[in-house]
Length: 310
Length: 249
Ligand SMILES: Cc1cc2nc3c(=O)[nH]c(=O)nc-3n(C[C@H](O)[C@H](O)[C@H](O)COP(=O)(O)OP(=O)(O)OC[C@H]3O[C@@H](n4cnc5c(N)ncnc54)[C@H](O)[C@@H]3O)c2cc1C
Image (cartoon, rainbow over all chains, first blue to last red; front, side, top):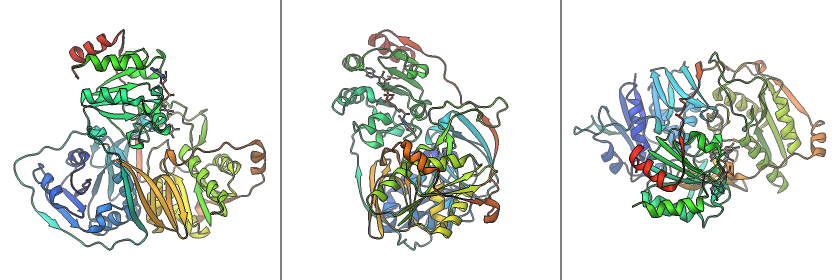
């Protein structure tokens, strides 16, 4: 049995969720890592001291810079079909590539795994997390995406991994071409791995009003999140959306402001350690999962809270 | 240009689903069912391409029990031209759905398949990508913007860091994200008209595809519930609790 973790990164830095995926993979056996990038060296340096890893395989190719699913899936299908398990993080990259790979290898993907029960049995949320399914796999190859908030990070030690080895060659696809990206710039911590998340909803009323929330976030060193309604209304960028169809977060503290608490939103944050809700409607469903609820107008409560924190 | 839009019948997004007592599944009896919201977005996008004169024909396909024909009728009422109903009584996984769609794709040869990025019941997020692999077409997942130029399609994709723009040769698969459009409601005259639009029936057995599930569901259980919290009366009390009780700030 051999297990491969496909490393997620932005060509300079490791995506932190990879560490959670490696931790999950270590519940299986014989873990190797794969780095596909136009520049693998820095990423490999971040991986080299992770405990209990066998080898790191790399392929450096300009085409991998943009991580098109067509290229990555083809490459992995050609070079790693003798593996029993291939794991990805459940990031937008993982979600894009892993099912395509499963299609190529004629195997049923096991997405968004939150627990590895044994080598063929996995738990995953369904219906926006309102139920948890335990699935036993009859696949020959398990292609799995890992929900990073459900696993710890892999440990870093002092010893080096086995070897770092260039492998395979890529025939680039001629179907899909990368054009450009419009990335949201931010000095704040990354939403899915932040300790504290401050999240705003439709109750904020406008993009300008979000600034009072951002002030609070900056005082706390927190990441910013939002409900779908706030994103749809154009108050904030799409990559702030938390929920069933947005990002899944589980920080130590989640502060939900002007968010009603729809099931689709709860699906993305209800595993947070401590949840606080601030909403002027004392009947708002967000309070049913809040550890501490405050039924007050946010335009009064948030600036007050911000000024009283030091 | 011909567009194929797969549509799935799922538990309505407003329903709070409950796990069955015997933990074999969620309760599906007497629950409101609707078209998967992402599939509505897919139908809407196809309609807009037709209204722009880019597409000429829209075919909606659904696979399952006879009830899924209602979902096809919904798509027809929104404006799709015809439907394909694949009659299948067994439970299907995305892998099997992708194989069935591959077979249909090979037969009717669409230039574009637009489908939801995920179904809100099993939350798999897989069928579109699997179908692209099987047809060996390019894929544009999580689309929030779409534009067709000649034999290419330009798509803005919602990714973790923002938006990524890619260009895919046709034929291609697009999976829809929430912000691609706001689906229309079917008008009463269109609902009436849809009753006369053709739906082709195919029996899944006739396609000779292996649809045996690869994941056996051993159990469906409730998620861990959270302990009940408390309401605080003031910002001061909130800060005090966060500092001294929860110790998170
Ligand atoms: C297919 C599908 C997928 C979805 N995916 C997601 C998802 O991933 N994430 C997500 O968040 N949603 C998602 N949704 C949408 C979800 O159903 C809700 O519509 C959305 O979460 C509501 O956002 P909201 O709480 O900000 O807005 P609302 O429900 O409108 O709530 C606004 C709240 O603000 C409060 N408020 C207003 N003014 C003030 C004030 N001055 N002070 C204090 N409180 C105030 C109100 O009392 C209210 O509770 C999805 C829906 C569908 C159909």
